Length: 239
Ligand code: PXP
Image (tube, rainbow, N blue to C red):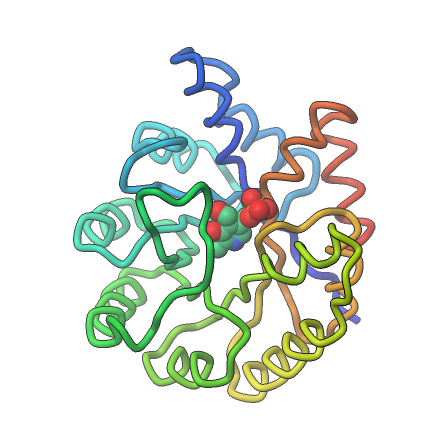
């Protein structure tokens, strides 16, 4: 089976920095070290409230990183404008609610389908690969294809929760398998992300046709104990 690419999400390096209003730890340093230690891409989420990554981080990281930068953005005019200007190689469009602690679920594609279709068209013309962060459901996958996304990223939050709590996760994995198979049959590239740990990444990586994982919170947390280098190397080995 071809290797699954690892996208390292460094948002929470910025979370720690911002908690004290300091200039360290540096997200740029984390991005460049991730590249050095074998990450295939670096992911950052520029949120509307700039709670972790800010535009300076985005510009600085993009100007120095040699591997692809994957920019996560909400479907808004402000983010569209920034993404068109910055031209990151990869873009993942995600839902965003101000009060949520993290991205709680997948995009509601039918809610703003027309805007999303126009946004995807502009961003693709600008040279970016477009992914949509969605739940593993077949209707959303058909819509993602219809509005010309290149990839989908399946929200793995639910299954990761079940695995963490040692609960029955077989139904969820069946659902994900079916979704991955369907998306792949439509020619969409399939990614997965949210809540992944060494254990859940190992389980989900057995599903055929997933080509990229985006992992942040656990990876940054684990780096405190075993270092960024060892954490990335361990994830690369598992997937
Ligand atoms: N993929 C997407 C699209 C996300 O929005 C996030 C969280 O911001 C992740 C992956 C990473 O999730 P986690 O930080 O739980 O590993």
